[in-house]
Length: 323
Image (cartoon, rainbow, N blue to C red; front, side):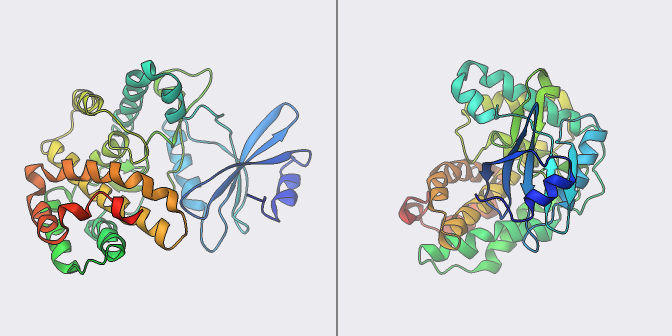
């Protein structure tokens, strides 16, 4: 977490030449984050190094969210050539850690997060690429591309994709909302001095697409990085249905996109271990597989469940055999 070489000159040009640069976080991509401290003020420095990363989609979606009245980080300065962006700092109160420290607040915070989605989904999708069949299948196929080979399984990818095509067909035409794509407890900040939906700061939305409203809800309630009790998932799902009043077929779409997302995550986390040398992601796989198994039990997933039952034996699910 050494600051990028261009950071001091960038900060000087932005009027932060007296600032200290401290490591803040890295993530599953090439992006890194630093806290920038100066007398009486602070900010976050995003390092999105080209050619691996491009911060422009993040900036575009942030502007869209801010225009709609949501709390996305405001841009203080940017150097796109070096992939450096200076952002508003939402502090350290991340949803996950706040709930861990105060479990009694869990239901209230999840309710606020669900209400935020319901409010966002009242607006048409931003001008973004579509979450289409090609993208759904590309993501789901990360499981057969990475997880199956890691266990020595020889699986036939085309039949896997065919099962997903059949299952996903009913929801493919719904691209009505902005899908943030990584809406969960590690990407939501609780901003001091703000309450309810207004107090939730949004992060990590640079991959946003125009897609189905169920996707971010299942991302929140089937969180790969923390256990969400099934009772809270059920309550929050009902809360969304009553608040947003989505169209028919929403529950089927919820379980379908839960399965699709969890299959994708199984593949991504396996890749992070196998290719990128990040074994800590293996610890999340049992949780993700548990969500996936539950999703597969829903009638809407029948073609996909049949494929899993035929090609991935029960004892090779769960991820424990990779550790």
